[in-house]
Length: 440
Image (cartoon, rainbow, N blue to C red; front, side):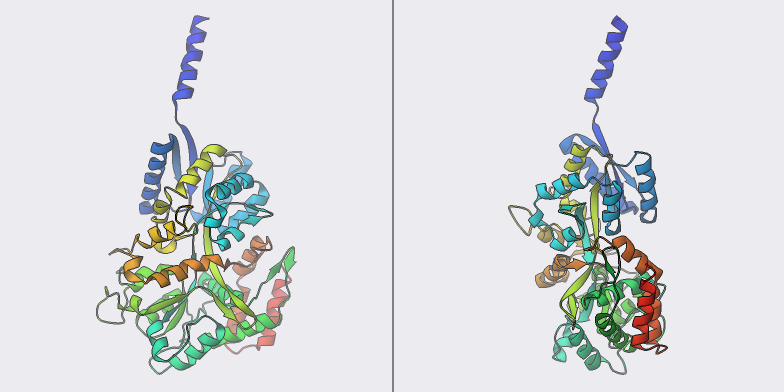
């Protein structure tokens, strides 16, 4: 009996003296980013006594891994994941919606970008906690716009006027995405169509398209006709803009450090110095632009989230996310500042605390500088504000999964290219797109 009591005492002592621990899956698997996340986990453990095991999961494997873990009752406590999983995982019971919503409320709903919250809304709750995001941008030569007395490219009309005014023998008016099997074309097209109010899905199905799509396709063809011939994607658009051969492209914010000559593998060639910040100083960015059928316009965004799972140690998972989104939020954003805009702008004491801290984080690869040394405060505030109105097909309707399947089928790219190449009329293009949508 005495031995049994000793064993019981030893077991109780060990159980009570051991650290509580949680598991965290992350798709930020690059070595430098993993190292930063492990440092953050150690800082959180030092503060809370809660150990965090940081587990890398390739983004392409995340869906299958999560489904398998859910079936086995072995989900991690927290997952860092993309927008596409928020509502499907909430509906499948993989995410603990109430726990995630409680974290957002605790941090202060009004401190988050509205667009990032709206994209994660399930009923009256926020199904996952927005962490960071980026908005696609119209990147343009503000010096040339000023020289030719042009308005910024905030709508179809202004962009069309600029294309006509700035096209010449040495310069293409735009570089559109035309390579149909590239996701880049899918992203750019969705942004351009969203700007004119085009939406392919409704609750439970798809929507028949009409005037809005027709006008958007005519506009996109105008951009493509002002572009070089051939199969164009991100590579050519960046190269031509960097060489001063076009005044406008659509790109992600990952171009911002490259514009300033901080990455040797993608140097600006506008002058003889590949490390010069000259091009960055001459560049403006527009995140939200509009078409004639949608005056409010739209911003296309990619947002990432923290999700507390159904198998989590809820209290400890909440503490980890609250730390990562408050005291440790600047460190969270520092993993890759040029592509991690703060979706939480500040806190109760300073509504802009995190935006200001983020803008001072060093960006770049071969050389590093803070964004505040490269771009004005107005530019920085403008690109961050894109997350306020951020949108994607299917989010509002709870049909992101259906919208993703439509985009991944790439028929929109192919039919748009047929129209660009004058193989079909715009009415035929709309009819063909409607026929494809009916299959979903």
